[in-house]
Length: 126
Image 1 (tube, rainbow, N blue to C red):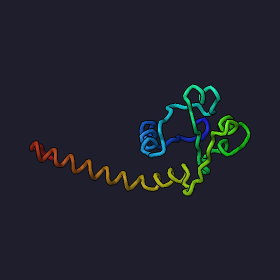
Image 2: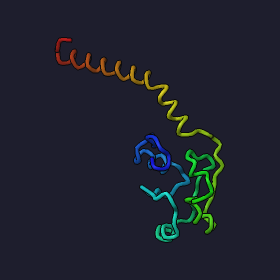
Image 3: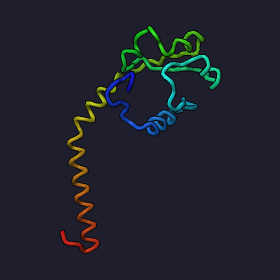
Image 4: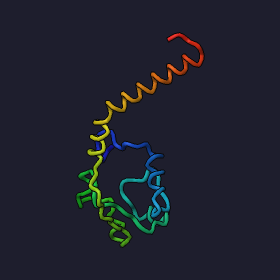
C-alpha cells in the first residue's frame, strides 16, 4: 500500500504465492520481499534472474530514479518481459466493483436456500 495506495492487493498473500508458484517458469517465491533488490539479497538467496513485466501500476515502478531493480540491472541479471495484457489493478478493481451487486444477490439467494433446507431438514417453522 505504501507504493500503490488504496487497498491493494486484491488477493491474500497465500493466494498470490500459489498463483505465482503455479507458473512453470517460477522456481521459488520470496514472501514479504523488500521493495528494493540489493546485492546482499542476491548473494544470500543465490538469485539468478530478477524479472518484471513492462506493465506496472505505480508511478514509482516506472520512473528511473531510485529504480528498485538498479542492482540486478547493473549485475546483468535483470530481465524485462513484454506484457501482452495491459490489465491494471484499477481495471480489475473496477470490474469487481461493477459485479459486487450481482454477487451479493447470488449470495443472499444461496443463504436463503440453505436456510430453507436447514429448516425443512430439522422440521423447523419458517
